[in-house]
Structure formats: C-alpha cells, structure tokens
Image 1 (tube, one colour):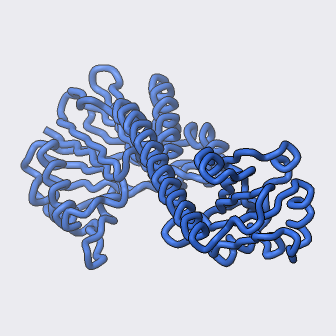
Image 2 (image 1 turned 180 degrees about the vertical axis):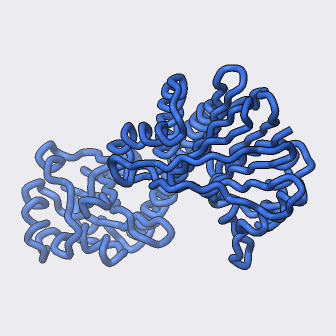
Length: 387
C-alpha cells in the first residue's frame, strides 16, 4: 500500500479479503482512507458495486472518470470522497478470487492506462501469492501446535494404562493398547485385591478423539475408587452406569466394558459385561473356543440397568483373551474382516507361549492381514493364563 502511494501518488489504496461467513469484502489493509470511508468500507458481494463486479467476474474494473459512473451505490461514496478515478483488481489464489486490490486518485482522471492496468493486475496477483503463502504457513503452525498438544494428550493417556502386569498367584498376565490415532477410547486395567485377588477390566469408548480419551480417564478414576470397596463385577458396572449416564448422554458417546474378578484361592472368575465383545476362553487340551458372555447393556444407554454376573473356574493351562473390536474388525484391502474365527485359531496356535508373546504375535498377524495399513480403530488386548 505504501509503495503504491509513493510511486503512483494514489490518495487511497485498499486491500479487501472475502469474509466467507459474512460474504463481504472486508478491509485488511488500507492507506489514505478517511475515517468515514473506513467505517463503511466493507463491501457486500454484489454487481451493484464496482468492487463486487471485479470480484464476481474475476476481472479488473477501471473507472477513469467518475463523472460517468453507472452504479449509484458506489457513486455516492466516491463523489463524497472527491475521487476522480479508481481501479479494482481481483486478488486470486489458484485462479479463484479471494479479495480485491483497489486504488483511488482524487487529483487525476485517466491515470489507469492499459500498461498501468496490466501492472496493477499483476500486483494483485503477487498479493494473492503472498496471501496463499501466509495462509499455508499459518496452517502449518496450527498443525504443529495441534500435533504437539495431541502428543501431550497421548503421553498422559498412555500413562494411565498399567506399566506392567501385577504378580498374582496361579496366573500370568500381559496387556497392551494400540491407539489408531494420537489418542483413543480403549482402556484396560489391572487392580490387585489383597494377596490373592485381581480385578481386570477392558473397555471401549466410542470415538477416537480427545473427548473419548477424557471419558476413558473419568472411567479409570471411578473404577480405581470403587475397586477399593469390595464389590462384585455386576455391581461395579451398575455404579459406573449411574455415574456416567449424564456425561455420556451429553457427549453422545457410549462405553462397552467387560469386568472380571479372579480369586487365586478358588481359581474362580466372576464376570459381568456391558455389551462388550465376549472374551475368548481356550481350555487346556482343547482347540475349541468358549466365549464368556453375560447380559448387560452398553454404559450410557439407559439408567438403572442390572448387569448379570456369572462365574467360571480356571484350570491349569487355560487361557483367556480379552480384546476390543479393533482387532476383529480390522479389514484387509479386499474389505474382509479379521474376525473371531481367525482370532480363535491363532489362540490355539499360540497357547503355549507367554501372554506377552501371544499379544505380540496377534498384533503382528492383524497388521499382516491388513497389509500393514494403519488400523482404523484402537486395539487393546489382555491375556490371562492359568499356570
């Protein structure tokens, strides 16, 4: 703007950029504009003004003599300001108009020769390039800031998961969570009850964003508090549903969960489910898979839900896999799902391995099945093996 004024003695120079929401050409930079002119300088997108015409037709509009103007709305302002000639050139980004460069002279008519109009139009094009570069730089900065924030969120979320499996008499354990994005909604936890008891929980919050991660953190907080009170799996799910119903309804999210308690003295597993994938139990010496299921609604669907509680006894060599649907619903390039049958066959193949090796092999298999494509859903796995 300063260069235009200095080199060509214009009285007023203005850059207006389109406000997409308001559909108006809004002043972003100006030199030489009176306060009255500035207060009414935004322009609606209309053929009724010369700036609107230049934008809508994506072409430079020149008026070398304001005495012959044919647009009353523009004439009112121009004559009040004493302007004798002016030009508007569209500012474009990749050929699309995004704004207008305007120059006004109060002293001269006929200043906008063909040669000067070509220069003026090229200058508007350079402004478009500068604007595009500025917007891209701003997006990159925002993306880096967002990436940094998401990395912090991921670090916090992963820090809420168990760092190692506890030692409980009669079993060996391992677990992992692999978010599909920076943060996710899967959750698992081990909660030791005295010397011979263990609570094990696995859950899946719908969604793969910060909201799901926040709810996961809230779930963990409630479980950690409630598990200190001696409660059965069905009762804990009932308490969770009552606590979370309002939050889940407002967030339009829901949670599936499987909760079990293991008593090392009796080898009894007591369990309840809130609509979660039934864990797979592979008995020692059998290639068949049993599924642990119990009646119970997904958390956050309705109030006052009763969760069925069941029991099963583990024998030495039995293996239990808890998982979220990110593994069974992983798809290959042809659209085929990994599925429970494939998961069951792999458990039979890997049953002699340590729980952590089983998890590592299952993850390798699902990645190979998906042809090393990025997983579209979080994957959590917990393996419990009776010794």
